[in-house]
Length: 343
Ligand code: ADP
Ligand code: MG
Image 1: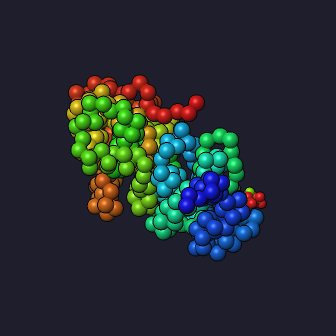
Image 2: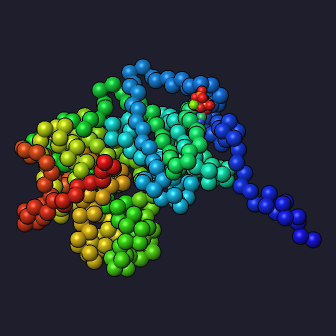
């Protein structure tokens, strides 16, 4: 016998808990590892530091339609929201300790979405060694917004700064550059012919780099005393190197031929050389970009072996200002648009 109509509709209704139920059911378990979070049942949390450690604080706000596509899986959104903050901690040389989570939830978000989102955070916390200590949960008529504030610690005197590069310093970057920007082009279906050059594994690898950046925490922790300046590549390689140059008071030259590219990115560029501008100015790589004195080049060269993350010398700091990208014959090929800007 068919169920009465009203019941059928009820069964299809997504479950939507109230604010306090959501916090107690999905978020309080994520605070279990932090005694000072009081199971998210108090007004604020206590965070203790060991003597000689400094608190490092950073926040990033991710808005649906701007920083991620609303159709992305809740787990991918959770991982990215946390990881972009951990990348900032890495760029300061800090270790993650705790984080706060601000959520503005549109009507379309139900319990099953939150469950998947929180489930992913549980895995990410275990992997990166931090716990949830607080946050805020509000309803919005606007797009889904996820704001993570990450707390880290770094020993006094071991913090990395953007400022400090000097003329003659070598410029290094970790991992490979441009994968995330190409991954975004792929998910948006904008790579056309170049996409045909990729097999399924390569396509998946580029998209994964866009969805799940890898914060270079181990590398960041090794750079104190070696790097003269450091930043994570979030806006784009050239734009972020410009940030180091501006606060350090110098310019930089980058050799395009030295840029570390993944095999997949190499195939895309072979098919469509014009996409090199996307590689140079596309954001979302979350690699570490740093400078070190020439005299320390041997030490910098050992970082790859010590951390398991490729570290490549791509250029040097020079007199003047701005970043110039040159090809093998020294021709200036700096892209007109160097990185992402919101305003
Ligand atoms: P108040 O109104 O006093 O700011 P809230 O009701 O917003 O308190 O929050 C109650 C507790 O739940 C606080 O400890 C807060 O940090 C925590 N909390 C609220 N939303 C979240 C969230 N999305 N993630 C983690 N903790 C949260
Ligand atoms: Mg509140």
